[in-house]
Image 1 (spheres, helix red, strand yellow):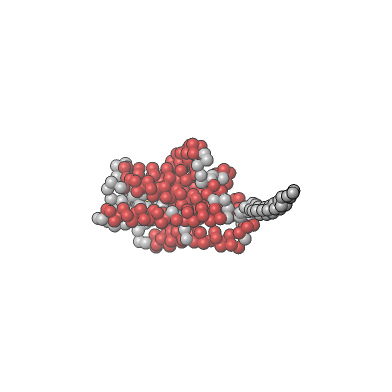
Image 2: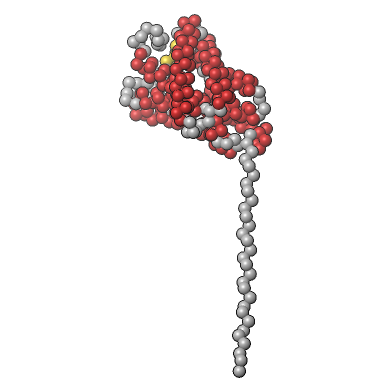
Length: 284
């Protein structure tokens, strides 16, 4: 007797292919993706919490200088002064807190550029060219620092500038490190916000290169007005030079390095030389 084997069960159905994720659309930065009005408001708000407000306070302080009974150059503009005289540890804590809070606009604009504009790399704040950026920054610092000192002395002797006191910090162990940290904060904040971010955003808003450059330079001059007309004019000139370099190279890091070196030499050099060489103005 022959037996037949039962028919084989049908093969299980093939699993449905997993849906392939759609490729994300290419990033579109600038005014097209963010919207002209929102981009403009972003710029105004960033400047409002950083250097535009500093410019307003500098203008008010300069009006106070002009209306004082003393001559302009006999008044003092202190850049790094004690926040808690006679209490060095509290003073140090306040100095570091001030430096850290002043760097918040830098992180803010990098965040905003990361969402709408490519991040810090969009303004050349990266480590792709460390040696080239360092050499360019050092060369720029040597040229601008020397010219800036000569311009300040000429403005002070003409009576157009206050006596700038780069440091009145107490003679304690942390004075020089804090001065260098303050110089680095100045370099980062000013160049990232006023040169890099602002020029990129104004270009995206359709500004002409020269108009954007002039606006950036005037802003830089405005928040130095508390030093007098010399401080205003000298920083406008620096803003024109630094801004044009950024427009041509797209890299802000050499400007940060140059600014940091200029301020570091000015701050620490003043501590070393003030009162010892006759040509450096000191408060009286």
